[in-house]
Structure formats: structure tokens, C-alpha cells
Image 1 (cartoon, one colour):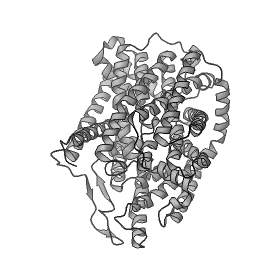
Image 2 (image 1 turned 180 degrees about the horizontal axis):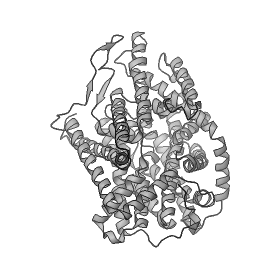
Image 3 (image 1 turned 180 degrees about the vertical axis):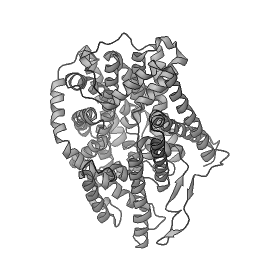
Image 4 (image 1 turned 135 degrees about the horizontal axis):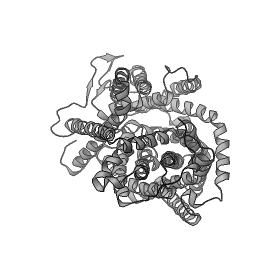
Length: 575
């Protein structure tokens, strides 16, 4: 569809009313908790823009008069909530921070709070500075932002449709909460998974995790992600646990009960994603050059039209940089020089992600994080912890940049004031961090990191790359060198294939499959297959309700999982 130029829109009157802040904070807290649990389970997270619009519309009616909540207020609510929802990724709680735990460094809560706030604020400010260039002058589409604006308009034009979506989301969430409680809580009426009987190459299929997990979250992810992604994840997981793992065990390389087995299976997955990321970055070489021009265009041109005055921008940037440098030392043992270098790289690579999100609706967060880990190699030789932190700076700040520009595009279409949007996103970043820091501590205490219910695939990727860059090939487990090289070549080959070959697996999704248990990957595939059947039989209702039902399932298990974790921490449940 045609996108209205941002500079031709007259902003409507409106600001951060109490109704907007309360509704946005409530929805943002839910999105942040859901993304934290989702990311630690599946290595994925969602910007939540459309979900925030639907929930914001519903919650606003409970905290204030509906007549005072129009499209502009909904856009501001969505901006605040989406910024909060992005904070688990921005703060590195899905990748760099759990990787640090795996490397032996337990993060202090205050340092973690400062780290996340610093990166979140930098992401919002960079998005505000790039807005004039990308949204006004070049009028890039930012498809997620356009879709969000269309949902906001539809909600306020047809309250009945809004009610249907809200009820579907609530019902899916309640069902997911009930299933999760009766699986993990008391009474435990539902098994964790159904495992396939039998053996392969002398290895028990149940021990290898081949089966179907009763996870509404993973099925919800499959419903939202689609059959191509779900099939790619399942293919990667089955290749890892049904082929590579039995092969290594049968050769006597690794014992079936050895912790090295999971690392052996993980490395080909990491190599797949790194190979695909290298191709993606080379294909976006032009975007890097354009991003440089974007930064030169934004330099020295800060005005109220960008949402913040020059003095406020300078204060926010200075404070955020100090917070990242100090907390980087505490969390990752990063030297001030390395932290400052990564902050500079985060501006450049954040601009790359901003432009890529505008042109393709995909921000290459993982790719720029991996590139940063590689570039910082000479400064982090023998320091895998610092290397993981370097990647966390860039990928974290870039995560908030993309989400902020999607929100700014939606706001431009409905005429929301830029200044109010920017401040709503800054408030959202704070709300997100206040919510997820204690939730992270609770989850780690109850479930641990990269084990059991929280496999933390992104953390395994961060850790693996950090060990490789800082320590060389010696970081690989026995026998993994050759399969890792083959997997990297496969990732490159798949990334180079023409886009019209839609039947080929997605190398990134396939790589994630190697990093999660097979029974979770199969649950994701079941959700994706169910969504595909629904789309074929009733495409209209599937398009309208599929995403919100998937979001409800994700949020429901996330909430129940946190409640179970709290009960475990308090001793009300036994592990």
C-alpha cells in the first residue's frame, strides 16, 4: 500500500496522558515478560506492535474514558508498550547476559538495570535522530509500522472487530495458563512431553529428546511464524538430535550423558547462522554506505521535529554512554576503550538496522552482533566474557532502534506528535527494565540457564562465538570441527539461493533448531502446521485472529511460567 509521507501529516493534539501511560505500562510489562520467557525458550522475540495496539485499546477503556482514547492515544500507548517489550532483547537478557552466566559471571541487578537502560535510551535517541532522514525525506515504508497503523485505524472504526481480537487473545492466554500450570504446577496432570519409543544407533530416542512437548508457547510461535519457519526449525533440530548426536555417540566421540553432547550439536547450528549472516552482511554492503550518509545527515541537526531538543539529546546520550561503560565493566569485564568502541559501532550498525528495517521490515540484529564479536577479537583475545559483551552492546541498541522506527512510522500515519512518541518510548524503556530485571532473577533461580525449560539458544550462540573468537578452534568440542565447517558452508549456500525457492529451509531458523530440544521444535512445527491448515480452509479468520491467538498462547505460558518460578523460589512447589 502507499505510505503517506511523514512530512505531509499534521500531528493531532495529544500527549502522554495518565490513561496512555497506565495502559501502555500495563501492556508493555506483559510484552516484556512474554518476550523474556519466549527468548529464553525459543531464541525469538516479537516487537509486539500489533498486539500492543489491540491490548492498548482494550486496557485503555478500563483505566479511563473510551471517548478520550483515539487513534493518536493508541499510537502513543503502542509506542510505550513496544519499547518496553523490546527491552529483553535490548538489555541482552536473551543472549549476552545469559552467555555471561554460562561463562561464570553472575550479573548484579543494579549493573544490569544500568546496562539495559543505557542501551534502550541510546536506541530510542538514534531512532529519533534518523526519523527525519528515513521517514520524512526518503519515506521508507517500515511495513510493520504501516500494518500497526492500519490495525489502530480499524480498531477505532470498528469496535466490534476490536472486541473479537481482544477476546481471542484473552481466551488463548487463559487456555495457555491452564495448560502450563497443570504441566508444571500442582496437580501435574499433563506430562512435559510425549517421547518416541525406540532407539537409533543404540541411543534411546527419549534420551535424545525426540518427541512432542506440550508447550502452548512453542505452538503459538509456530502459528505466528508460519510453516516455512516452523519446518526449518524442526528440520535443524532433528538433524542435530536424530542424526549428528547418535552419530557422535556411536563413534565414541562423546557419551550420551556428557554435557559436551549439547555443545557438539549446537556448533553446527551456530555455524549455519554465522554463514548465512556473512552472506546477508555482504548483500547489504550498499546499506552500510547509505547508513553512513544517514548519520552524516543527522549530525548536528537536532530539532523539536526530531522529538527532543539538542540539550536533552546530549544529556541522554552522555548519561547512557556512561551507564554502558560502567556497567559493561561490572557485567562483562569490558575495558572502557572496548566499551566506547562498541558504542561507536552501535551507532553505525544501528543505522544499518534502521535502514534495513525500513526497506525490508527485517533488522539484522544477530548479524551485526556477530560482526561486532568478530571485529572486537583482537581486543578480547582470551577474554570470551568481554567478547560476548561487545556483541551485546551493538545488537541490544539496534533492537530498540528498529522497534522505535516502526512505532514512529505508525505514529506518522495516524498523526501522533513526534515529541510525545519519543518520550513514550523512553518511558517504555524504563518500564521494561523495571519489570524484567526481577523476572530474570526469578527465572534463573527457578530454572537455571540453558537447561530444562529455558534452553536459551541465543545465549549458546553468543557463548560459542565468544569462545571461538577469543580462543580459536580449541573452543570446539571433540569431533565438531568438520561438521561445523560443513554447516557453515551449508548456511552460505542456502543464503545465496534465489528467494523464489521458497521450499528451501531458512538457514537462521534451521540453526535455531540445533540449539533447542527436539520436542520443543516439534511443538513449534505442530503450531505452524495447524496455522497452515487454518489459512487454507478459512483465510479470512486466520489472517485476523491467528496472530492474536498465537500472541495469547505465548503470553499465557510466559505468565504461568513466571508464576511457577515464583512458587519454586518460595518453596511452594518442588522441582
